[in-house]
Length: 319
Image (tube, rainbow, N blue to C red; front, side):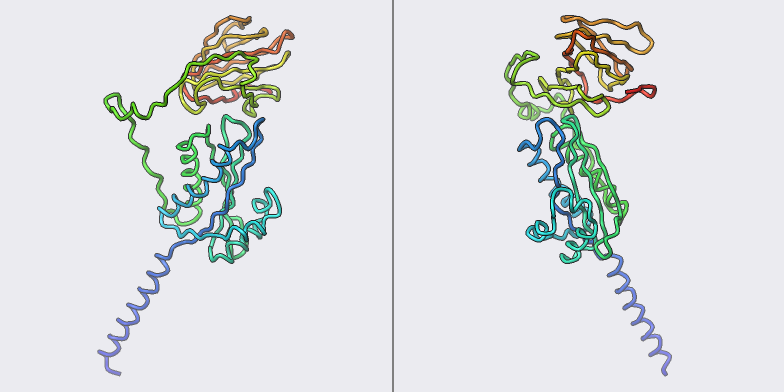
């Protein structure tokens, strides 16, 4: 055979190989995202705002992964409904979720849930399953505070990072949006109008909810003003008589006034104080402290937080 022909054939096969290789490298990974379910354990479960928020997570996640280069595959809603034997079924049955995705032509499927143990925070949870064999690839949890859409999106971005890490490693979260300065006059249009209001600790309008799980059962909190995920939130904290609050700390300073009952409060390294109705107390940033309500309870404590609300158990704390 003519050497020139051999050279030409080798060149042709080389080009074909590179083309096939490029198709394999640049093929989009396909993923189906099922509707997120809401597991709401608060005292006022499944309010319209939370249902709407949960429904929006799927679209947010699809947008983030699509922007990164993933192929988003839709699963027929009727088929998803028929396969779902009840709350949590698809979340716990990887094989059924995989079958749905396989029929839709997706390589992977993400089954999600918004788990809300308290109004203070929620967890965006996800199971990533390979559709070809039902193998669980990743089990993810991303925490989000409050119900603000921007904070929910941050939780979705965190979830997208974890999913991408187990797949193609091509996702980069968007950079934080520009902060508005004092000289930016457009900020004035973003400030909502507020109305003055007053509330008593026994007011029927108050919405009491459970404290974070780090506090024993019986602790309740009601938001008086603001958003717990933002600075300057005001709350009532209520505990029954003979209730002990474990040693904990906050990232924010606290300004407190006892409204009812008698509360003994002690900051680590300092002498304890007994608060009576009308007594003011100040708690520094990250200062560990514990408290107990006497038998004259219940105790209701007004707290004004300077920064977004959080709570962390101290290392030596015992519930």
